[in-house]
Every structure is written in C-alpha cells, then in structure tokens.
Image 1 (cartoon, rainbow, N blue to C red):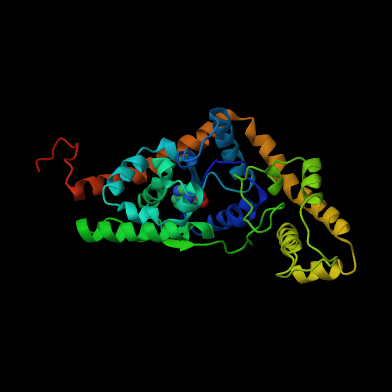
Image 2 (cartoon, rainbow, N blue to C red):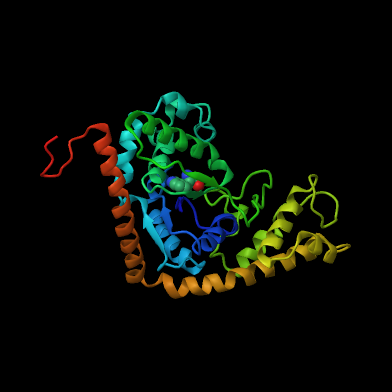
Length: 331
Ligand code: TRP
C-alpha cells in the first residue's frame, strides 16, 4: 500500500482516527510506503522553517503512533526525484480540462482560477505519479481524494492503452475503522490540519490545558441532550470523538450522559482525549530529539522508494521512446 499526507499543518486527532490508525493496521498485511507529501504542501504558501520542522515532526509522530519503521518505509516525496520526473511525462498527456473540473482545485482556487498557481492546478497529476510509480494495490485516502483517485486510474489506463501495459490500476480504500471528524468550531466542515483556526482541531501534540480549552469552547447545539442526530452536528461530532478515543459505542455513551449537561460531557471528553494522547506524546518525546534516528528512517525509506520508483520510471521512459542511458542500448 502507498499513501501520503501533506505537512501542511500539525498532525491532529482527525489524521490519527481517519488515517494513521488504519495504516498501523494495514502494516500487518501489506508492505507499506508512507510518504510525507512535502512537494504537494508547496501548492499553498509555506513558511520554510515551519515546513522543515513539521516534516521531522511527522516522522517522529508516525513512529509514536505505531508505524513500525522496520516494516514500513517512511519517506519524503522530495527525496525521490522519480515523482517529478513521471509528473512531467503525465503532464504531457493530461488535458487541461480534466484538471479544471477537479472540485478540490475549484474550491481552493475560488473564482479566480487564472490567478491560481500552476502547481495547485497540477496537483492531481503529481498525485497520480506518486501512486503509479509503486504499482500500489491499495491507496488509503480520505473521501475528498476520490476524484483524484479516479483521475489516477484514468491516466493509468490511457498510458497503458497508448504505450503498452506499464501501470497497475490502483484501488482506493477509504477509512474503515475511523469516523470522519468535523471541525470543533464549525461542525459543517471536516476537521483539517491546515485549518487557519487551530481551535478547530486537537493537535496530537496539544498540551492538556489546550485540549481542555478547545473542547470546552467547541460549538454545541440548541437543546441540552447529549444525543447524536442530524439536528445536532456539534454534539454528534463530539460523540464521535468520544467514541473514537474511548473505543465505546455511541449508544452507551449517550446512555451514560442521559439527563447530564453538555458541560459535564465536555469535561469528561477532554480528559478522555488527554488520556488517549498521553502515551503518543510520551513516545514522541523520546523519539523527536533524536535527529540521527529521524534522518536514518528517512534515508532508509528513500532508498527503498527510489529503488522501486526508478524501475517503473525506466519502463515508462522506454515505453514512450526516450533513449535509455544504458551503454549497451543500440536502439
Ligand atoms: N493529496 C493527498 C491528501 O491531501 C496527499 C497525497 C499526495 C497522497 N500524494 C498521495 C495520498 C498519494 C495518497 C497517495 O490527502
């Protein structure tokens, strides 16, 4: 399996519940390549210092969350040049209209598509390159990436039918174990690490007092019952968070808080989240200071990723008629 996460904000609890937790489980059955998509993160402005610090933080947090660095390859997208090389080849066969129809591009570029950066426009093609280089069977992604996955499959078929069978057609796999968490301040939008308002999420490294404040100030709904339902998006989301960190079923949580106030429920929820993140933060602190170890993880990951991706890239170059660099090539 191959997947990626952009270092475009601090890893937060929604990333754990919706992605990392699944990846940890998939390690048992699949060879895993976990990519930190730093080149994708450049499609929106990044502070250089923050980007670098966060990239290391991701590596340490992956390990702290249970990614086994012996089994899984963790690598930086920018360390493996085949990604941008295949990007170019795919660019040369991608109609602009396909990219113009991408809902994520339309959302991010807004009305002024002509002022948007070319990188943002090209984002799905880089993602297709990421995936097709490894012949991944399984690509775990969030719901918002379904259209990009469709595009990836379309490009693979198009390439294969034009130049011969080179790419495997990848399957999308959306989160199985976790629910989708929504913003704490705005339960109508997904909880996101790149949200400009950090009060919308609980970061994996938030200290207890910050967690308490964020949950205490999370929006709730009219009424007073701690109950899940369409008319109660705020409380439903907090219940989903409670269920995820405690492993309990929503119904039993609702039963326990029947007749209780929102405030009491929120106080308990904050303590559950703190207890849940405590061991992760402890492991993080024992790994994060070890720059040598983090560097080694990335070097090991990049070595493996390069080996795999370069084999595919060579087949692509050959298929499209580029002269190979091999000495014995007389064609
Ligand atoms: N676009 C993905 C996201 O924002 C991140 C990503 C980049 C990715 N390349 C990928 C995910 C390749 C899976 C496979 O979630």
